[in-house]
Amino acid sequence: MYPFIRFAKELYVHRNDPDLPLDGVHHSTHRCWPWDLDFWWELNNGRTLTLYDLGRIPLAKRVGLLDVLRRERWGLTIAGSAVRYRRRIRAFQKFEMQSRAIGFDKKFLYLDQSMWRNGECLGQAVYRSAVTNAKGIVPPESLLAALGAEPPQMDLPDWVKAWIAAEDARPWPPQNHPKP
Image 1 (tube, rainbow, N blue to C red):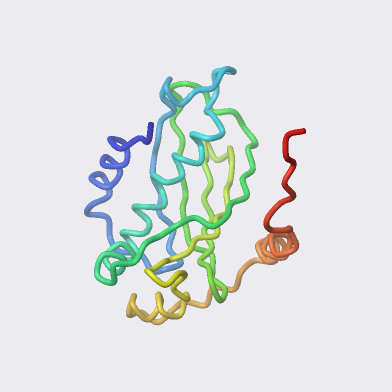
Image 2: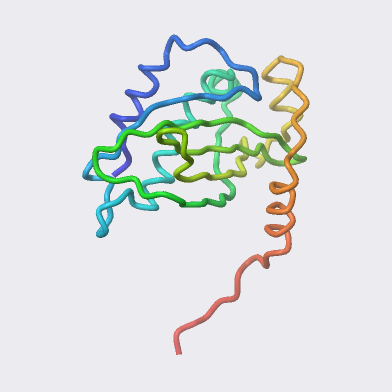
């Protein structure tokens, strides 16, 4: 089940945090609870992706995106992700999450999130996110204009450009393997 209570808690805890520029970093602290565990008694890989939501939504609030989405009646979706898992997170361990926008292209906004404990990175995810309306994807230029701020210089890192190129080369739809 989606962690709605934790989601509400994050919005409450960060309700008075100062606004951030589009390229600002949102820091949040989380704990791995027993219901987040897999059969190996560590943070489940699927739950990890869900917990990253708990950092992205307060980030969206702090940069003004949630207000724009409500005003324009736009939606927000994840269009792709790449995740690295490097260190185990066990039951009851606390960790810090860092969430930030790292740039955009003609269709998508790219986000970088990572989990940390005692200065060591436990895992990292990069997301391709799209703002949507009834007609489809809202171009990032329209989003930036709606935010009403001068966009910061946010050149995508080379590793993100390489990921985008790999995604563009990936066949869609994938090959169908029907049952014999």
